[in-house]
Image (cartoon, rainbow, N blue to C red; front, side, top):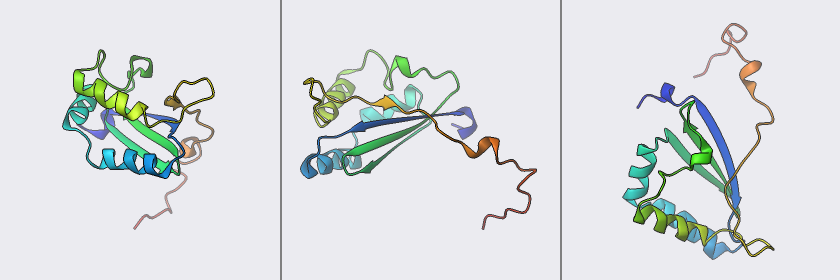
Length: 129
């Protein structure tokens, strides 16, 4: 798929349980992600997904098409058995809130973007090696 088809960036955040063992477990699962998850993300379609962490804070970057609606979920709905199992497993590693519920991936608001300040006309002297 061409990256130009995926014109929208969605950024989400969530907190894992603040336990180094749980954080490592989450990372280890993603180092060996189940093939059914990758197949599902491609079919949704997700152009590219990246997850970063700082301690127990996770940030997800989703590159998706302009028509992608996050309200429909990241995975195909209803999820197949393996995707549902993965979701339950990853959900169990998230931070438990005072309400007793687990934290959920939440979309972040964009604060600033260089796009309206950078343009090829203004930066003709900028050379990237």
